[in-house]
Length: 204
Image 1 (tube, helix red, strand yellow):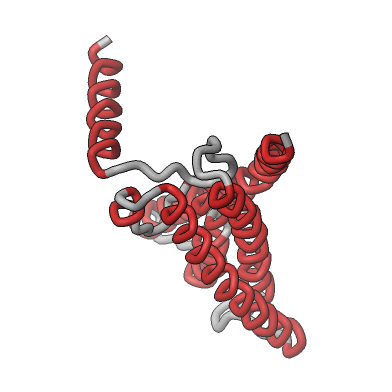
Image 2 (cartoon, one colour):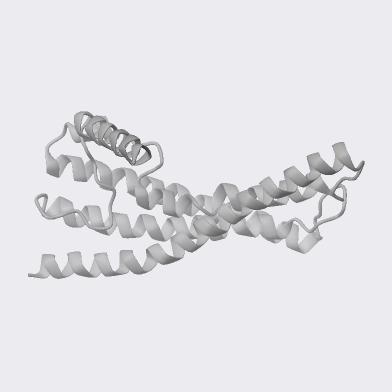
């Protein structure tokens, strides 16, 4: 019962935290749309009207941080980062969950160091009033987004550590708040089914 209660608690927290991760990912998606829109306006304006966006390069540089970092926690939730799933899927369950636990623990240590160093970079930019070369946009907002996004990733890693620890203790329990590891054959089968499903959908 205690293990089931732990799984339910982790699942509820995971679902609630996923809303924040999705919101950050949506902001990153909005940044991509912004860059696309600005790029089109820049090209059309220069070629047709001999007009260009003031500080175009500076705006692109500052937007890039939002696009690159805000979606990393959501990507980690989905297991979208580079993973050794083929090797892990061949291991016994308890050993597989132990490997996942140790890798997430290592990632948590590295991310903790990155949060500190990136926050120090933000503080320096804030204190000296650092800005871009062309139109003098302040740099601190783009530098602040890095430790914020990494903090979101840090909490996702903590959730996954608890999830993998639960699975290590109870290897046959249903996975909660962790990416599902599948074999190479299962991954290929899912890809085939997804492709066939998309093809049939276009046919209708």
